[in-house]
Length: 260
Image (cartoon, rainbow, N blue to C red; front, side, top):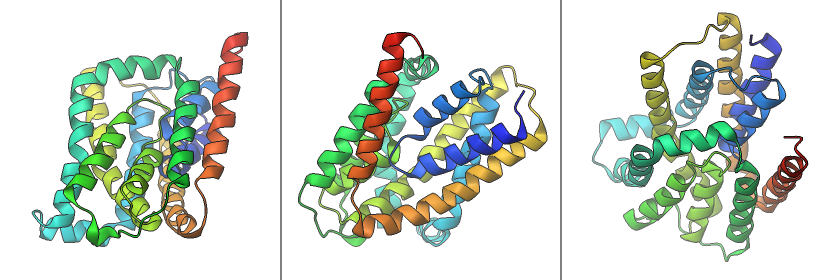
């Protein structure tokens, strides 16, 4: 049974870590494991992702209206191109990555890889390319990094921000495009989860707890997007790299000792 406190904490975890470069799926797995909610279910995950989708839709409402009015404009096409790799990888390997996510056997290593990519990206010479100068090659390159983040503890936001920096985007634009790409990525994940719910057993969870989880995910997701864009203007990604390294090594040590 999902309590209100557990729902609040899981919503906070999902909202913050979806947009901070530290992996929401990896942290959500750890949060559920800590609460003994490994079998809490797909419906909970779906509602948590609905919350973060609502958050990013609110932040980028003007950009979304612009893309809806001009679906073949450059911004809409850049997001489409950047989404294609994740669609292909998700379609071909969804079952494989589902099985990996359920066991959590590799998340320690994945956190370490996320940290390495963040550290390297922050160490390269930064570019000055803004959102108006992003090309389709840039979008596709960033999209391939997003596709790699199908592994549970490879951070989607971390990898796509890093990819933007590798393509010489300025830091704010790298975050901006990363979060724009999150909209179809999160929405696609919700559609996949909804399909599985329709064809399978739906867990009986308290409505009040689900509502708390969704609202917490939305509110903390909104705060994370706004804060992260401001943070990247002047601050380093290396603090996140150190954090996920500590987390990754801790998980590996616990796995070796049989405590996790």
